[in-house]
Length: 354
Ligand SMILES: NC(=O)c1ccc[n+]([C@@H]2O[C@H](COP(=O)([O-])OP(=O)(O)OC[C@H]3O[C@@H](n4cnc5c(N)ncnc54)[C@H](O)[C@@H]3O)[C@@H](O)[C@H]2O)c1
Ligand SMILES: [Zn+2]
Image (cartoon, rainbow, N blue to C red; front, top):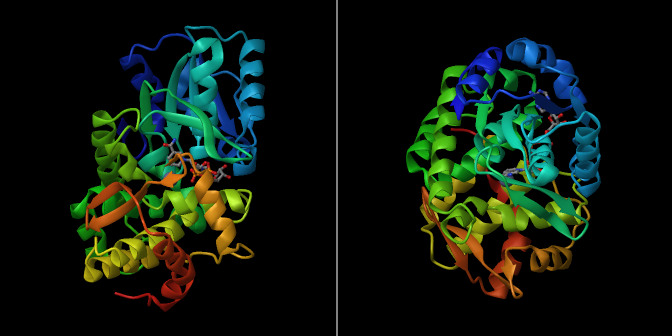
């Protein structure tokens, strides 16, 4: 993983350093390509070719898009010496990564994440995949990138809402894994969408390191890696129940972290003061959109379907302190229900400020 402002311009140098000599086929979205394509092309020098552009809406993160990419790869005669370069946010990374994992039974992958979520989370760790109508990320593969290039300069063109969506994943990382990062963010005060570039770069590298450490100890998510799913059980359920259209991923995770924090307090696994610190931090990321027209029963049903529920039993990830989470926790039904009932009220009661 290479992180730094301006490194996009040196893409070819890093590819060569990793011994990647064959063709590079870029997969991106129209928007990302329009904004940053020229910069990537100049960084890749002579190795560029026409990119494969995909629709990167979450609702199009499906097997159809993977098939379309594989067919295009076949038509441009990509072979086993070719490299897929995923250039975009988490959707492009997940879809292009999955295509790279199955085209010709797997070709090389380079991730060049262009969103905060991508740089701190989705491009790290080798998980790729797509959604099914039955649930989020239900079809996929582990396919580790040979190289990740994260250039924070590219985040300058994200909307505030998209930036905040990534910041929820940063908070997830801090709560579940890194108390030092959490304290750093607390010291910042104010809203978290105004970090200086230098601080942002530090935060990104810190998240990448924390995630990489966990992943290196549990690549296939048999255990420890599950802590990275803090906020995601409810988050994924909200996304699926709203057909991936109403909230950004990070926003759904924001709601999920609130619910899980309330459950942790309710189970006496988390001190109320620490719970309050976590909730305040979530509030400082940005405004969470309300979840309209989603009944609690529906949420329940979607959670039962989530792939992390083994044999109908949901293994919850709960914060048990600042920088530490437990996984596989069984939460009593009534606590789950009251967390769903209370989360919107609790959120609205949180004051923005230092
Ligand atoms: N594989 C993993 O481990 C993992 C981890 C976390 C999230 N994810 C997945 O990532 C996805 C969310 O990713 P995301 O939050 O990056 O959103 P996204 O990929 O949907 O991108 C959001 C929007 O921003 C645009 N965009 C991207 N970069 C831009 C830039 N630099 N400037 C302006 N616009 C830009 C995109 O075109 C898109 O319209 C979800 O599908 C989630 O499941 C995967
Ligand atoms: Zn996530």
